[in-house]
Length: 282
Image 1 (tube, rainbow, N blue to C red):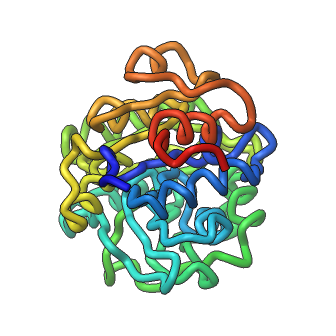
Image 2 (cartoon, one colour):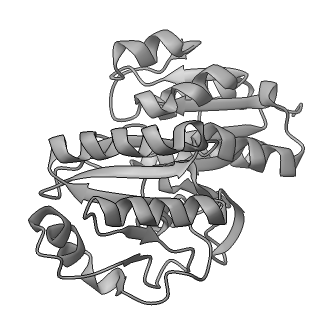
């Protein structure tokens, strides 16, 4: 069999690898495994914490590094090693912690640890702030409280509060630190509050995928990226082939070169038809 045209397959998790029920279907699992066997190495890309991304990578049953924490870190699930991390510069870290304190926002800072270790720490708990305390309480077994906040590297910090409060806090972060940071405000239905996340300006799924690709000697034109949300747009536009899932928002569809079929196994059908057509049915 000839070498595949694409040698790296960047895969979003929720809505792409996983269906609407957050399940990895047998057909999708098999298709990704066949791509890997054919020389198209998969990279799992997600905004999730590593602890929550690790089981998905393991369920795939193949060697698949994980871009997690919204692209701030790349981990190797086989041994929990770190392949790349977008550390915040020390002076920026100090400035951010001061800004959180000025606005009365307790800090959530994510740790670079193994998948079964505490994966975030908070400056205080309980804080008396309902949205923040709800987030911590629901994840308390994976949290550390307090500790030395002057040592170690920071790569992903966030505040948790009401939507309007977090929009205002994001504005304060941008006004003070400008192009040095990347921020976004998002809410999960699992929690009462909304999160304002802060990363290094160059952190993101696509930049993290490029670090992996460079280590593997894969140029951008030999990357196929597949996703379904607006934070996937940079990698859809930057990859040699950008693919949007059929249910993606219009702006994501517009950024893609191709659109995968609808349905739970749409990703599997796309891989079979466009990436591995010479392998035949199986």
